[in-house]
Length: 275
Image 1: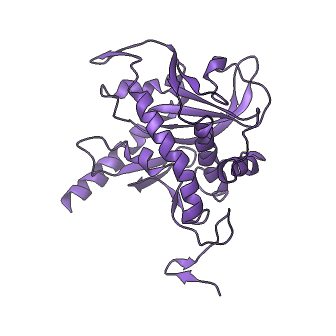
Image 2: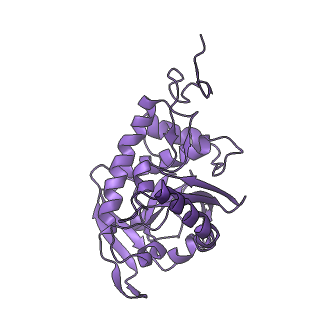
Image 3: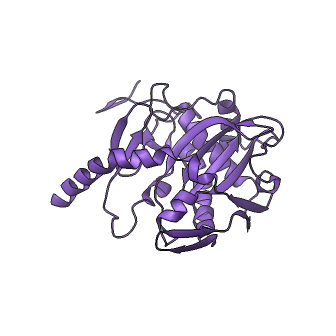
């Protein structure tokens, strides 16, 4: 017998097809909450979709009510917790100095180790799978073609990660320059899809959380010449993240979004303080 709530009929989980769905965050809530830096921990933020001009107030980021049950969402939660700890650790790695408005960045690669090989790639696959599973008309929906089924097997069924899928972590220098304290995060960006590389471009998806941009190669053979080969993480326990001036322009749309949402955000948080 169908079950209903006050908001309408419950839907079944896309993975197990047995349990009712929950409000599943598309980007992990822990990453979203990082942009509420002290002493603004009680503030809201505004999600801006440049393609449509839509602006939505938010406390914990966007979620979808019709993709995952609690049990299946927790499968991704384990990868997300691991990725959250890793990104927090990497953000403390010094890549330069800041004095007032002047920043001196030492570009290059920075070594780190992961506790579990390929676990971070499963995290990235999970984020893209969720955005690809949202309705076509939903802001932020992405089309990753056959990779949606591939990523589902990788994330939820423990499938091996093929050579055609790989991940890269790059320090977001625009975010780095915003705060002197590395524990603070300026913004996050939802996934985009396109081709990256010069002589050997590959189809990739990328999103930004925790002061880093995460790139995922979308089921294509070979590595793109977008970053040093040692930065690609598949099969590696000893890894490297990349720091390049190019990252200043990857999320350049954030400049206009900040301007377009400034007044909305100010009004929103003034109204919260009055309550």
